Image (cartoon, rainbow, N blue to C red):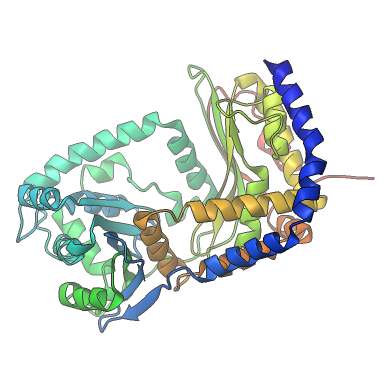
Length: 480
């Protein structure tokens, strides 16, 4: 089978010059296609933004679709908690659907079901989100329900006790997901002593002690109009959305109770360090290794995303590997260094984590780390233009594919309004990606990667993971 595949590749490669001649004879068609692509980017429906009196921003992208997604993005997550109430933002997300002063939990669920809508929520380290997917004709009703659960939740003691058990079981499930565990450990060591180092779910002792007072206090402290964005995508006429938001969310407050305005999180310090949990009963080692990246608004974010795409991702279920454009994937597949890996670029307001998470056999950890750090050093010194062009094309494709549907578009609007204070047009993102060349990648990687202290988190049979001094020495090259 491998022999036949090789022969097919050879035959295809022989036809390339013919295809090239055919393409070169239709330069007009290619130019037309290029212009059409650029025009299509510019012709994306505009994102309209209006701020109502209490500071809530209403941002919509109206496509006239028969369905819509609307939601509330709140600039509050686990980063805004203290050690004493860590986990309250996630707890609050759970309690939002347990009944309000107008609707019981059963009434709420039946109303959503009868509309054929879907109601959901999630909590991250910097944001809390409540959103609904519905028919365009039900946007007003969905917004009314969202405002009800956001401003009129009852937080009954019996519901709080019942949800306490649900969250504790969720914590047990998360502990079985080693990727989640490793990333929590990575944040704990990279941002030790800061709010970003805490988990989103919070420690068990906090979950067992959180009560109604903690939930109400968190809402009164953080759920303020200027820190909220109501986003909509699909069949959402902007003027109608603004009217509905004024009607249902106009009562959300701006002022803080009392005289003391709560302190917002200060910049979180990154610490190069490692956290290792050795467990030889596990079959595979799970390791994450990262340097400090940049925040959302930093102009270096796009070049880091391109560099991240050059590293790429791979696992044994993928057909590619030996023929992949990623050098690390080629090494991992041909030499059997890993079961899989993925590069990541996790951004926050003022900092970020840029690195690679990988899963491998215990005896290949050292070899994979060597290849990974060699690839990082190569990005700093001699990355090629062809690699950067491939990564730019892949990043553009992924960016556009992620905007397929009203829900991802609505999420993109809400997140960008909180992170950038505006919605970045697709053609602007495409232009910023196109401006990245090989020299830009070298400069940015030299600034963020070369001779920097990494943060490392590892779980499993990790005896062969090099000690931190060796890992640190692999972050630069000595050449004569």
